[in-house]
Image (cartoon, rainbow, N blue to C red; front, side):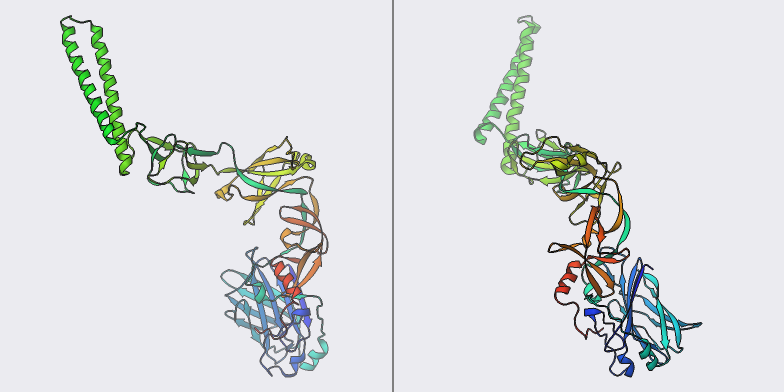
Amino acid sequence: MKLAILCIASMAIALGCNSGSHGHSHGADNGEHGAAEELPGESVTLWTEKAELFMEWGPLIVGRESRFLAHITDLTNANRFTAVVEGEVVVTISVGSKAVKAKVPEPARLGIFIPVLTPDTAGKCSMSLALQSAKVSETFAVANCTVYPDVATARSAIKDDETRGEIGFLKEQQWPIEFATAESRKQSIVPSKTVNATIRVVPGREARLTAATAGRLSLESPVPTVGSPVSKGQLLARIQPTISAPGSVGTLRADVAAARAEHTAAKAAHARLERLVATDSVPKRRLEDAASNIAVMQARLSAATTRLSSYSASASGSARPGSGAFRVSAPISGTLVEQSVTEGETTAAGAALFSIVDLERVWVEGRIFEPDVPAFEDSNSAWFTVDGRDNVFEVNEDTGKLITVGHVLDPASRTVPVIFEVQNPNRALRIGQYAKLSVATGTPVQGLVIPESAVLQDGNQSIVFVHSSGEGFLRRVVHLGTRSRGLVQVTQGVSEGERVVTKGAYDIKLASSAGGAPAHGHAH
């Protein structure tokens, strides 16, 4: 159990706790408590690692029914607290060896359990509440209490201890929004400087593929898609070159016919020379020249045939690239991040086809101002955050390294680049994403810290909202010191152990501007 807050406040009925501006009625039945309805009620707020209990109840009087309003919040998600929506609650009041229990099997409504019991023995007592649910199970030692023998005794003993200055923000307002708190604590914090940064590709880990020739492109099966992994050497597409010879299909056919005739004539000439060489009528060298001529004519015939075939395939769009097609293969392993062509498209030489990036490691590049350069050069620790993710990415000997602190100042901005190369687990970091890069610039200091997300700017003041009771909050002006890893040192305005609002603080600020919680009559 980390912290408990108990309040006794004046109320119009026996089951409320009016703390400052957020007092509200919880809807006791008319006439149920008689004279006891004018007595102050009590409330308690308790936190554990997993749950928060905010409970209100009327004075405990022998023979009179006492109704408890237990608001229970699930704290297991540190970024958003939610109502406990199922489970069993047991409230126990013990006077000496005698105990009275009240059990409810489920919440009466979202996050609110309403056990009812009737004390039968007067005296000093202890109170506890046990929650059993599939997600959260906790036992709260609620408070030391008193069971009064009658209404008159209760009236004379209970005093109004109203809390002033609280801003009311009801559980019904907290639960639907992104709301969370954190406990202020003392710990070591490292001085640092923070700069804006960008996630970039590591040089040598990016490939841009272009068309080596003009032609019709055919994608390989399975068709590569943006975001899919590719392996080095993987065939992505083929390009069937377009014919370079001018003229119509008739001209191409004539070229084939001419080449075939020349090839036939060359073979006939070679046959004649073979007979003449056999009778020593001509030199043997003439026969060798004829054989070479056959090879030349064969090459011309093949070229003419290929041009005609390519023209026919290009014109119809029905044929896949043949053996003369250019292969487009991945030069590196990585992720396909861009595809600029479609099946059957005719490309120009040099046209962009695919972009591949190896995202296993990335650069985090920031710009630092001239006076800060020495502090960055001597640092051996850094960390950064990116929009949309609450976690902090550490840069250490296991996860990354410092590549450089630039040596040439930009004449316009008077800055130099600072670049870290880091691992990119699960490819969580996106190329081009903005980051906040922090670099350690000094030795650790001990201090009281809270999350930076708890701090709001109100004019020229830094403020936080302290969670003083279940539905009550206090505005505090704070003085801040060192910032590091999402935490900020508080030198004035918050005490150790107090809880500050880390998510939803702006909503409370709006509520304070509007005058806090609704007036009496907020019924459960």
